Structure formats: structure tokens, C-alpha cells
Amino acid sequence: MIQLIAQKTGGSVRQVCAVLGQARSSFYHAATPTATQVADRALGDLIEVVFRRHRRRYGYRRLAQELADRGLTCAPARIRRIMAQRALRALQPKTFVPQTSDGRADKPSPNLLFGQPLPVAPNHTWAGDITFIPTSGGWLYLAVVIALCSRRVVGWSLADHLRSDLVLDALRQALQTRPAHQTIFHDTERPSHIVLPVI
Image (cartoon, rainbow, N blue to C red):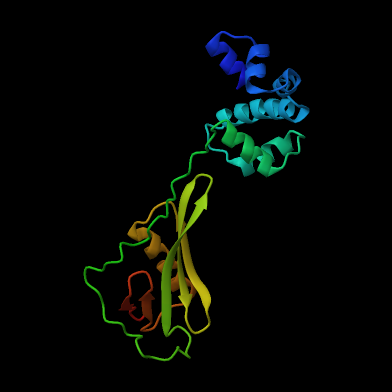
């Protein structure tokens, strides 16, 4: 502040300190960076390099891990403080949750299991569902057919798409594993049922 006033008024540091009633020694002491400030400046330069290299996608936690991998241990709170001082804000990733169904059924089937107890006979009722699995190569979709009586997986299929073949492949595998005899197939994704013919 004293330096700024001296520059704007054209006066000397001695004159500004005399007007403000401050000792010149305090000004020179404050103008000399401390060891912590010097270390923070060097660390801040390194943080900024890593931050830019990763295209502003690393927050203070990942930066702390990156520095630790380089053999430099640093408290996350210190990294967060230095990032705030340098106005480094990590980009927030957009959360994407793939939908396995639109939740609508053009021709909903009657719920044959509504109000019914759990099946006690094998192959009386199967249930099918789809889930998604994030991988480094993108999303994969898993269709599973479960026998409700034994709770065993009788068929499954894994693919990178949500076309009808995904479910049909899982159902075909289930039919090969356990031939169906008037088995009810319950689709938990968009509640509907079909009765599989005698195989």
C-alpha cells in the first residue's frame, strides 16, 4: 500500500511513511516475502502447470494426488487456498446417467403377478431387467433374466446398445438353459408380461 501511494503521489517511501506514522523498517520487512510466501509461489506455479496440462479438469484432491505421485506431499487445504488465490477453478463434469427405458409402454400388458405370492415352482416366473455399466471405452448395457423361485440368473446378454436384440439374446440363453413351459416373463423395466409358449 505504501509503495502504491508513493507511486501515485510521486513521493518517496520515507515521506509516505512519515505522513502515515509508520516506520520504514516495517515497510521493508513487509515488502520482503517470507519463506512460506516463496514456497507458495513455487508450489502455485507447479499447480498451475499441472492444472493447465489436464485442461482445468483437476480439482484440489486430484492435484494433491498428482503432486504426491511426484513425491511432493502437500495438504489439500493448502492447494485449495493457492488455487483460490490464483482463481483456478476446475471444470465441473456434467453428470450423465443413461436411461434404459423411457418409462412408457405403447401396449402395456396386464400385471399377472400383482397380488400374487412369490412362485414356489421352478420356471413358473422369470424376471428381466437392464442395467448400465460405465467402462473406459464407454457405456455397456447388461440384460439379465432371473428365475424368481430360485433367484438364479438363467440368461444374460452384454452389449454396447439398447436395441431389442440385447433382451432377446438374454431370453434365448435362458430358454436354452431352462426350457420354458408356460413360463411368465416379467419385464421390470416397463412392467409388462408375456407367457412363453411350451418349448
